[in-house]
Length: 397
Image 1: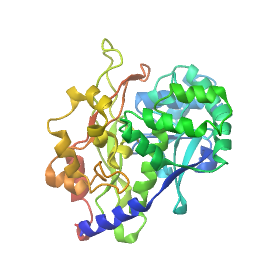
Image 2: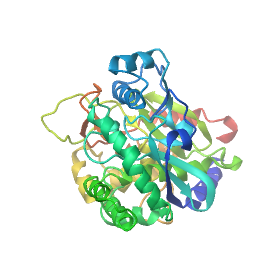
Image 3: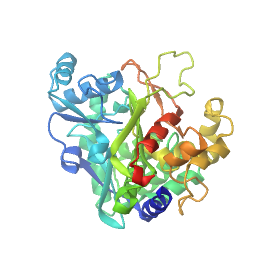
């Protein structure tokens, strides 16, 4: 019965103690080969024709790596399959929005204090301003990548050499300070900045942290990835219907279940909806793009909005009726360290209750040029979870 398997999987999730243990280039961290790029969400139907925002980020990465001499050359390399786009999650990596990871890209490494062999990775933030994750082609992004990898990464690596950083206290500080840990990580980032201050003697880096309230986001993405991955670490969990991934590639939305973690169940993706940075900006929002739904699946993000007044108020017009009461019904019991919040998303409960899960994922332009449009809320289709549960092995029902 999946109920017993879920209980076991949940115990394994609760046993994980994520800590920020390193900053490592993708080529070393996950043995990422040359001419290979990692993208969010399930694999593309045709990786030579990715969604426009992902293509834009991939083009900039080709230029950054020195694989292409100009944008047209980069586009040809991708279209011909000479530069391969692969799903980041198949490498144990989660990446935000349209961010593409190349071999030189520096990743944050999060490990389990209770299991030194367990690791998860996400992209190291590069500060305020143009971002690779927004899916545009602003050439200033390449300079940000260079600063991230050559200045920020060595400094943070040195700071972590003094000891890993436990992420639960920072997350708890965030929740207490009004963060949902997805749309808002302001309080958690401030706490991290305070903790790093005596370890990093670099004014520019302290200034970057002060101006980048979402810096904690990718650390928490990796932490949630690490926790949820533990659900699949036992053969006894093979009947578990807990959701260990909720992600989009700009074309399709996909979920993975603890009981069959290598299998994606996918459906056509819709776009997140939410308040725009510029109310006069009417650019079309891209379909769901990013791996950060792992945060919401773990019980944070949209599941923490009841305790995060600022993002909840911003999303007020976009939240479904009764969301405070309904959303917890499709999640397990709470994590012992976060008892005010719902627990892990359960596909079987989604089907039983008929309640569509929410995720707090930002909106970016569908054209691959406009970039960030604003905060967003995504409603995952119930039929996706129905198909996943229905296609579960019969002996696991």
